[in-house]
Image 1: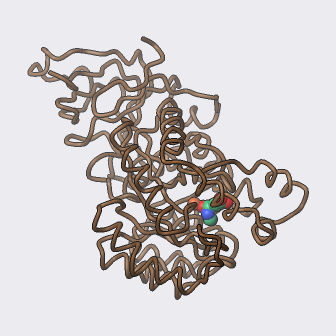
Image 2 (image 1 turned 180 degrees about the vertical axis):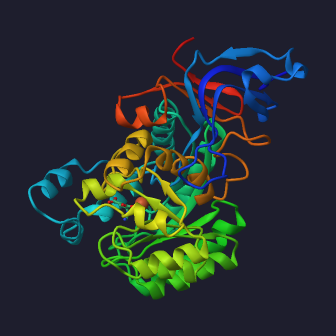
Length: 415
Ligand code: NIG
Ligand code: FE
């Protein structure tokens, strides 16, 4: 039987099942997991393994800690070129917005991404997804946002569509055509904001929906990017075409992002460094997932998102990398989790549930994966650590020993 087996000798199993809220990992010690046809069939103490499964191939976790497969629910994976020069400029005192206004930032990456071929972007995505798997990542959300024209945004979504068939990770695609307004069109003419928004609403969103190229529609609401009015128009248009709303908000200042996300019933609102207490309450009432992105706060020298205020208000908080060539040039999700602990005051347990169950919720996959429960995909990770707290505390380059996706060992550093 393919994709079926028993993983036993698990020292600590953090199931991350929903009961008890974000701080409760629902741990089973000396555990085993039975999976049949890529899905979890039984989970419990190894001593209680039912006889019915005795014919299945058995694998030993060697006493290790096992967690659900990690989910990176916010990345800008497909991009051309890096921006190390801006890293230095910011350290020397120039601001992110100032660099962007003088031709750097997202516009610079847009230029290089437009020049990149489908094939080179696909190879880039395959390289980084395979690196992520080695860290325990089993699913990834991928945004566009560096094409910024009808053809180039579709090019990025087509790269993600092909990536889906070529990587073992689950890929969730997001249209982020409203990242910034491009300064120039691919034909060299100046781009007008109203025409660009019209193109997104009247041509791009309908085409993306018709071809099934994305599930989510995102927008960057910020000075130098888009307004809350633009967000209402673009995200409501997406909703009409079946694209669920996501938002980049309150990253560099309080733009009323929390309230806006609640009003638009967004599936997630991300960044949130400056969100007001009213915005946090509105998100709690509307059940919007708050996505904490510690790399962006760290690299842009912004105050970190106040995760405690969100958690105390009853908001589900997810943690993600925001992997991109500007504000967050790292795909290391466990490192982002550790920074969510130290910078945003999440406990290691909260950070783990944030990068598994709540991250799955941020991409509408919480019924599919994100916890080790019967019926879910057999996605889990073996870590060479005594427990979750120790993993975050004694941070090492890589504690992931094996990554299982759909009952297959996609990464195995032992065999
Ligand atoms: O999520 N906030 C806007 N967009 C990205 C940054 C993109 C870039 O700097 O290239 C972010 O941080
Ligand atoms: Fe982002």
